[in-house]
Structures are given as C-alpha cells and as structure tokens.
Image 1 (tube, rainbow, N blue to C red):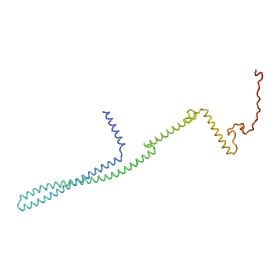
Image 2 (image 1 turned 180 degrees about the vertical axis):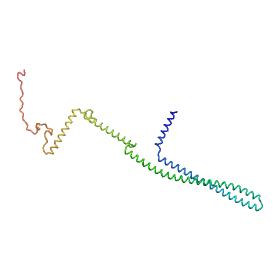
Image 3 (image 1 turned 90 degrees about the vertical axis):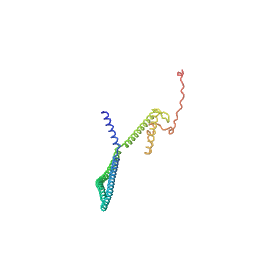
Image 4 (image 1 turned 45 degrees about the vertical axis):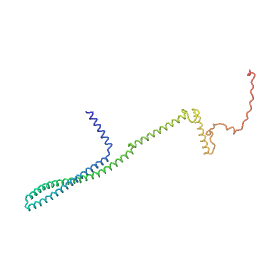
Length: 273
C-alpha cells in the first residue's frame, strides 16, 4: 500500500507541476470573471421569476376579491328577496374565497420579501463583479508588463531559451571557423615543408624549397636596395645589390685581355718510356 501511495503522490505532484506550467493567470482571471457573470445572470433570472410569481399571486388575489365582492352583493340581493338560504350559500362561498385570499396575501408577502432579498443580493453581486473586473484588468496589465520585463531581462542576460539557442549557434559557428582556420594553416605549413604534394603542380623537396626562399629573399633585398638608391640619389651598395665584395665588373665593361697561346707540351723521352 505504501508503494501505491507514493506512486499516487508522485503522479499528483507531476500533474500539479504540469498544470502550473500550463496555467496562465490571465486566462484564469477571465474564466473566474465569466463564472461570476453567469452567477449574476442566474440571480437576476431568480429575481425575475420571483417577481413574476408575486405578480401572478396579486392577479389571483384580485380575481378572488372580485368574486368575493360579487358574492357579497348576491347574498344581499337574495336576502332582500327573502331567500335566506341563497344568501347563506353565497356568504359560505365568500368565506371560502376569503380564506384563499388570505393564503394568497401570505404568499404575496413571502414572495415580496424574497424578491427584495434577491434584488439586494443581485445589486451586491453586481458591485462585486464590477470590482473584480477592475481588479482583473489591473492584475492582467501588471502580469503582462512583468512578463515582458522578464523576457527583456532574460534576453539581455542571455538566459532565455531563444537567446541560449542563438548563443549556442554562434559558439558552434566560432568553433567551426577556428577549426577551419587551424586546418588551413596546418595544410599551408605541410605544403611549405613538402610533407604534402601540391595538387596544382609538381612536388618540391626541401632543397628546392630552400632555394626558392633564398631567391625570394634576394629579390626582396634587390628591390629594397633599388628603393634606397632612388631615395638617396646614388647607386646602391654592392653588398646590397647582390654582388659579392671584390667581384669584378661584367665582361662587357672591362677591356679584353689577350692571353698568350699556350705551347703544347711535348713529352720527354723518359716520360714516353
């Protein structure tokens, strides 16, 4: 029994929590106001029904009073004609009608009192309904403003569900971007070191890559020396122009030097032997 009791308690707690999440105070207030309007309408219908019954009793009492007055005249007329028996019968009927009239008057007084009570209750209930309506609208406006403020604060703080999803998406995008940048840098380094083959050309070994770098550096130094020469208005230093110290000018700028023709060496007799 304790297991079933715990299961029932857990189920009720879960159901209560789910209902709390699904409940909207504004909808609850509107529903309560609607129920109060229905109750007020029922009270008003009750007042109308009691007033109708009272009016019906008044009409019945009026009709009985008319009949009683008619019987009174008939009794007097019969007595004047010497018909005492008829006068007695008319007075007997009048007495029965008077009893009904008294009962109707009692009912009329009760219905009138009930009508007054219901009318007063209807007025009080209507005042309460109007007061509840004003309070309901105030609470709904306050709740809406608080809800909007809460959502704004959550959006600014980044704890809302929508903003958290956006934040996660941005974080994933940044992580993927960094990963792609790191991969591109690693591939560039592997291509530069010759560990990977360049699909657009021939593969280069370390010596070729080193020579390419030296050539690139030499071009940079030459261009830098030319820029300095233009700025200074003079010629660039030889060591910066790529010429080694003590190197001779090009062959076209020097006088040709006549070298004596070398005589052929004849072998000696001993060497021939």
